[in-house]
Length: 376
Ligand SMILES: Nc1ncnc2c1ncn2[C@@H]1O[C@H](COP(=O)(O)OP(=O)(O)OP(=O)(O)O)[C@@H](O)[C@H]1O
Ligand SMILES: CC(=O)N[C@H]1[C@@H]2OC[C@@H](O2)[C@@H](O)[C@@H]1O[C@H](C)C(=O)O
Image (cartoon, rainbow, N blue to C red):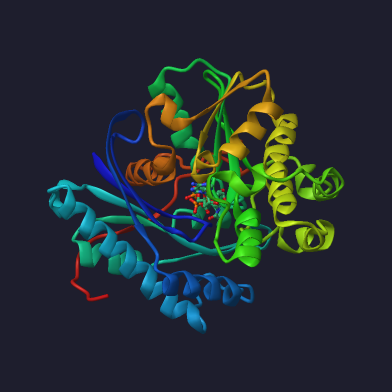
């Protein structure tokens, strides 16, 4: 099948698009990729939606700004796909299925609650393509963490690349997750800590720019080792998997323990960058075998200061950005949602006891057929 995957991640930067040819097991071919950034107004609305979502107890409720934000998310994804198809000379009939993650606004798996906004039915109807959405719901309802979902794809990717294990596939978006792929075994995976979210928020507060471009600020600073040690005492780092994070789970802890309001911009950026690298390093205690190679995907690969800190802390294992192996680091998650959509259509498992902690391998997703025509 030719599937198109859509991901809007915790960084709230935009919609990633990737086409993948797959039977839901093997990756047959990688297709084109695309990106549709959110405007300032859209981003601000998403920030408000995250704040509004804190009080949710029902995953289908859309109080206050959440209703508007959901309409915006659906429309932004529809526009993104339409422009992408046009740009690549593709017609809706050329795509068999769309894998639609939506935007997470709240993730509280311990309360069996994970909320992704985005209307799969409206998207399917507008595009005229079958959509598979709501991919975390079944897992959380069955007692799983609902995240990470990408491990099944990470495993297929390692197989496609013909890499002998143990290999760690690391995603550095807003939150970091890792999959350990070892020959033959089920993938073992978990969220391991913050990736860029804390650094992005810190940079935004101090400079108005939403991230540390090319890691320049952190490179000019010294890590505050005492603050780093305090931050690493967060109980999440000691908690054995399965485990997953909400984008803002570390926020209060960092404010209380970091003391970063007292330090220079450069020291704060260096310390938060080091926290990400150190969080990755400590995650090794939960791996049954030591990875020989870390394949890194996500926006964090664009930060050379972070990549250098990672190489230092993970030595002697090799650390390489996914691009160096010939697949685009920024689109692994979008490819994963294309892959998962095909698996959902075929009723294959998306999650496993060793990934989300679900009691047994479980399929998921809701299939929305393109039956009626709606305007978004
Ligand atoms: N040139 C760059 N220099 C430094 N950091 C960068 C650069 N480009 C991207 N980033 C970082 O990568 C982040 C975006 O990463 P990505 O798109 O993988 O996140 P996401 O998919 O939204 O998050 P998640 O995987 O948690 O859902 C940005 O917020 C920024 O922190
Ligand atoms: C609840 C939620 O949206 N979690 C995201 C987030 O962003 C990264 C990390 O935390 C990951 O576990 C997950 O996304 C990826 C795509 C996943 O489920 O594998």
